[in-house]
Length: 334
Image (cartoon, helix red, strand yellow):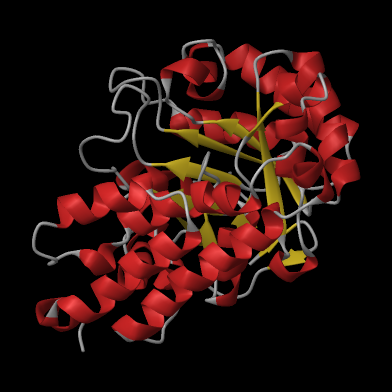
C-alpha cells in the first residue's frame, strides 16, 4: 500500500492521532513494535496560526518514527490552509484533515466531526489545502452525523474528487461518540465502490492484530488504524508476544523517554520539572494499561499512578505490580 510516494507495506496497521496520548515518546515505541504509520496528537489550525507554543511543540517529530503524519483540525478555510503550510515546513510526511473528532469542544464549534453538518465547507477546506501544499493530504471522518445521515459512501467520492490521497473512516457516527459498536459494513461498501481508487483505512473497535486481520479479510480495507486499544500497550503492533516482565520494562522505558524529552533548556529556564512533565505524559498510559487487569483492588493502585509526581514513586508502583500478583502473570499468557 502507498499514500503518495510513502511505501507502507502489505496490510499496514497505523497508530491513530489522539490528543494527550500520541506524544513523541509513545509514537516511537509504537513504531518500534511495528506500527507502519504514526500520527501526532491532532493540532488546532487556529492555534498554529497564532503561534501558540504548546501547539507548535506538537509538531516536533523524530526521524526514528517516520513515516509520520500530522493531523490538523479547524473550521476556518484560511486558517486550515495556513496551518497546512506550517505543517509542511515542520517536516511531516503527510497532512491529515480531522473531520471526525466528536468531542463537544471540537465538533460543537463546527470543526472535526462538526464538519459533517457542513459538507460544502469540508470540501472547500479539503480542496484548498490540497492545492496549497506538496505533501500528500489525507482525511479522517465518520459514517455521518447520526444514523439518519449516513453519508460516507457519497462523501468518500467527494473527498477523493478534492484530491485527498487516502481516507480513514471511523465506523461510528458523531452522535455515537465512542459508544456502541463500530459498523464496518459501510467502510467495506466504500472500499468496494469501483469509483474509489484511493486507499481506504478502517478504524474502530480494533483491539488486537487478530481484529486487524479480520478487518482486512472481511472488508478489504487497505490499512487499519488502532486508537484507544493502544493506551498503555505500544506492543499491540507486534506479532511477538511479550512476557509480563518485558511489558513492564517497556512502560518504564516510556517514562524514561518522556522525562528525557521534557528536559529542555526552555523547561529549565522556566524552573519547570522535566520529571513531572514526563510523568504527566506517561501516567495515563500506565493507569490504562491492560496488563494490570487482575490485580486485587487495582482501583487504589490506579489512583496512586495518577497521583504520582515523582519518577521513583511510579517505578515503585510498577515493581509492586510486577511482583505482587501471580494471577496477573496467568492473565498475561505466561
